[in-house]
Length: 493
Image (cartoon, rainbow, N blue to C red; front, side, top):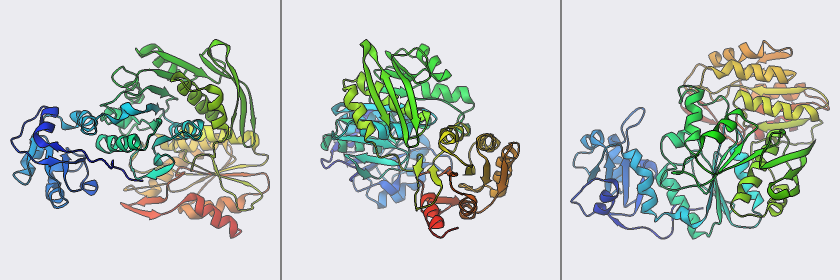
């Protein structure tokens, strides 16, 4: 799927300067926007921003060689650009970028409904359930696994793309007659203003737990970043999980009209009751406004997926969709790659791959699997390098509290010493009542788990989910937990 619209915009550079409050005497023609020289095509305005390691202005020659027609940057970037290309200079160009991008593509998000989903866990699954809920209607999904427009994949690298790429994707959606876009909204994206420039029809709050504390100062800062989605500048209506303490706080904080949901017995506009889990998912009754009652079958295991599904019903019903039709669509969902994904190769035990890489997510996955596991729960787990150090022992502790066997291994150590990360995870895992083992190589760790598993056991390989690589010292090595699991099971481990 293309990532830019067929109908190419054409702007004079001076027109764009007016939009961002800058000035230029040059009349270069601009036909696209790009932050990254690798994504830049002929005629683009190269947006050169300050970065963690270097200023984007340092790459102006690459931009010129790839066909950039001009540059938008700040004073520091202008000094680096010199007279290489025509330049618009403004203060804080990132802050102006989303509005510029939306205007550049003529505000494409106004052509379809938009659903913005935020929370520490469950965003990806919720977007997929929203897509399933709409059945055969043309929809789009933007998130961690990538972008899909009408079920056709489109390239993207961030959970929430940068504004130029996002607005270009919206323009493609407009051309493809998309009716609704369900989109993950990360805290990073909110802080960096990537989703400014348009207003979501509905913003959904799922939950909040420890994550991204390498980026945010503390949990309060993380919460406030999420809460920024629930303002009139960014959304028209809020749908909030009041089973979560932060959700109850948000309900009182947001100035938006609020619809609440609960699967845990709390008073709410939408409630999940008579919840009946089974091996492949959960059946329940949904009680909504004005005495509405419908049956809902969620074909994914875990109480958290019941909550995710109810969020979809509440959110889409708020913008006019029929709840019974939504329930029928959700029941037909085929699952989400790397999210409680079953891996089968004829083995006598259950094998699951899940993206759980936070303490709360590990707890949720294991708690969901315990009632449907007759034997032992065996988990392979690690923690990522160059990320929140404080959560590492908590990951091990969560695994040890809910699993019978914990195998600690490497999971994207990045630039850090892998053994140090494993040691921190083992500190938490060793405090539990079960068996905790350290196996450095991830493939060996999975092989160890498969070899231990017997009839009735469940093996969970956690942390990577849909990912297809293991990052070590700046190099991403090919590695897919699902493929490795199948290979080892078939080999008899």
